[in-house]
Length: 381
Image (cartoon, rainbow, N blue to C red):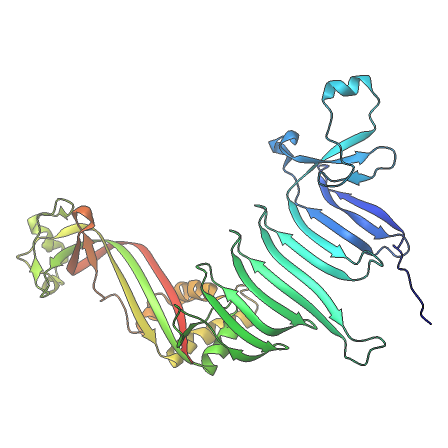
């Protein structure tokens, strides 16, 4: 003998919310009995009506029962021309809609279980997609499991990360992509890191860490044989002299190099030993690109100080490697680079016609145009 159970849709009613300016905020069905969301619930950014109402799509609202229909839904009718309304009684009105902000899809039978959730950037690109499922529990002997599959995207539409949550904890292989498309993977067992296998430059023996939280980064670099690189780009407006391949001061007639007066070295009394009195002095843009390697202990001195700032609550959600880089420059200046073995004595390059490069013999800075730091963490298997 078998018993067949027919599921029935729970009685529902539509709920609509509007912004103060009259544009649509959200719409969806909710169960009449207990107010649970059921089916698809849509949320919208506020429409900027200063750009004109006609610049937006419009939802249709029946005047008889205030039921709202979106443009992509069955039964939607486009707004009639204004002259048409002069000869008939209006049966509907139209409200402007901003860009889609997020959608939530609930079980269409009972309105209890959330099945899918999407969130969008203001430019219309997908920001996050989450798929929900569950198993076990109830009359089953198997333990209850709630699983969430998550995809995150950058604002330009490129994939940022793919991972799963098991009972609200990271589980399985999490995949991450930086903004250049470099891929990294970390294996979790309910939030505990079990294995990291992070690809870098298509080299099977070298891996690159990419994380949004330096507290996790600290643990990762301590667990693995890590190499910490610091790339530095600095650009100055300076007085300078040129050097040949042997490191001796040299002159150039390059038209793109601006020459100072012959007695210009008098400005550098006390530093005259650094300059060659027989060579010309130029003024203009010079720059350097350098790469250094940190020892783990030296790097952790700075990282631990930043983590203390985070834990004190002074930095809110600013926990990424990029946030750390900005903080370490603001707080420690060039001493961070010096701890990695670099500093202001590094060789600079000057630029002549057609971007021809000249080695700088010595220089005196007038203005620092740029000082950019990039931290790269590499690890060996």
